[in-house]
Amino acid sequence: MGKVTGFLEIDRQVGKYQPASDRIRHFREFTIPMTDGEVKKQAARCMDCGIPFCHGPTGCPIHNQIPDWNDLVYNDNWDEAIRNLHSTNNFPEFTGRICPAPCEEACTLNLEDVPVSIKTVEQAIADKAYEKGFIIPQPAASKTGRKVAVIGSGPAGLAAAQQLARVGHEVHVYERESRAGGLLRYGIPDFKMEKHFIDRRVAQMEGEGVTFFYGVNVGIDKPVQELLDTYDAVLYCGGAETPRPAGIPGADLDGVHDAMNYLVQQNRRVGRENIESVAWPSDPIVASGRHVVVVGGGDTASDCVGTAFRQGAVKVTQLDIRPQPPEKEDKLSVWPYWATKMRTSSSQAEGADREFQVATLEFIGENGALTHVKCCEVDEARKPVPGTEFYIKADLAFIAIGFSGPFETSVVRELGDALEMRADRRGNRSIAADDKDYRTSVDKLFTAGDIRRGQSLVVWAIREGRQAAQAIDVALMGSSVLPR
Image (tube, rainbow, N blue to C red):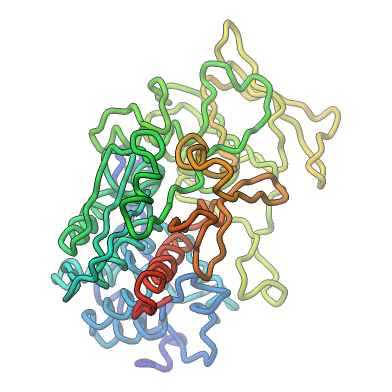
């Protein structure tokens, strides 16, 4: 490593946030970038730890070579740093902003609660690469004559499309919405990642020969069988988008919505699009002047919290059925794996009331409109504790308890029994395919991302897209120079 004693001499630092009172007034990103000198110092903290758990199976799903590009940044070699980073990750400017950073949990320095600021350095490398003009289209030197269709332009579809185009295949991406990105664009709020980063990558991919077809809902507007008949291979990256049913009485009241209806609508507003989405149609939902309750404790729930504050909510309460986790984990029993511990997102820090170990019993209303949420405490088995019922005033509520699988109204319905599906113990459905060849039970149809593995992180989607591209290249050409 460039500075062997860096971890002893330099304190951990990450980008600071704008004050909550300022950032809730807009939907833009609010992290204050660190200077190049500060980033280099943080990269210098990467220690020569022998076994870098940060990019092994316990850390980074896409196996970013973190110690290598930390060393390159420390030595001011930004050009080589982005080349190294791109060798494993097509979109580091996405992951540097929205990945929860399991690599930092697996960092050896996390044994002392001061891990290397890996996510901060990753974002800085990508942003510097654009600033310096290092990121340009990389079209294939020759064409293979093979054509591949990709259904869906989320992170898995985008990663696969770019990899396939770079080895010379003709790649067509079909997207049901009016712009590319999937939930990167329509699910994740702009205050976490502004969407011009997606537009910039799409422009690069178009320069590499990828063709995008927007407003085409395959399986409804265009039969998937037509694609199977036309292309040499079809990759289905439709995501896991069906909200998990909550089974809460009163969910049909005015004012109760699935989280994605709310988030997609606001993201379309910010992007100056019509709020009516193909997949998530809804009347206008605005939290201004409202008492908001968010059911769920994950990232989607947190995004609802931050969005509600920016729309002018009077009060936001978040309900989590899980017990409040400890402030710190037992390192020796958990590290280097992801630990269950108290975490507060930037949105929650903006003023949310958080209730733990609480079940949502019923949405209560008058004249068809939500007025209160009935709750109670639960025991360790998540069963209601008698006599602990209480009510929260609410005229707007969002259900954010995850997703149960893909939409089954398009490709899945068209292919019917020919497409093998599987279900886990919770009843979540996905398309059956392994992570070696990514083939489905339908000839020439491959699948990757959340639609195959279930709802997961953007880093897993990128990894699956890259691996599926390699598998398709092998299927078409007999071998591949693409990495897995």
